[in-house]
Image 1 (cartoon, rainbow, N blue to C red):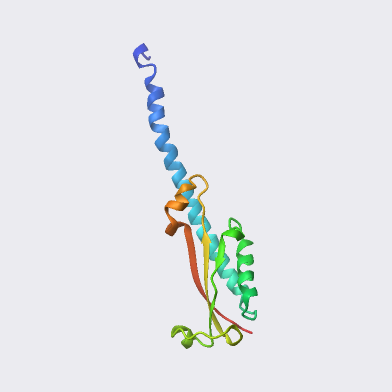
Image 2: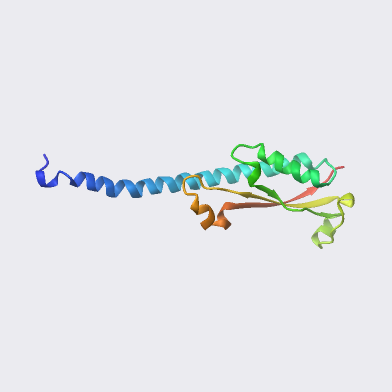
Length: 144
């Protein structure tokens, strides 16, 4: 039994509870989505590296890596960036940073980046660039 003086109190209590609750649900959704995209990106990078290791080192390999990564769900081609690779003729010269041209490459170091974008809170992407830029450095030993 409610009294006339308390008739609007449930509405006010609901409004006070639902807004913070919805914010928590949205944050959880975005964090889970970020974790999901991170796992997919990691798998895509490893798969792309496995597929290009039999190719001859060249600029085509970089595009092949981008294309292969973009084939995975949740990842878009325009958000993938592959930096110019560094080539070495052995693991020792890679460790000492003695680079060679692509024609003499036995080992290559690729830096691959993916720009994650929040769906529901797009301004968070610009607010946290270190959190939303997924980066991986991979070493490829060419078989060919």
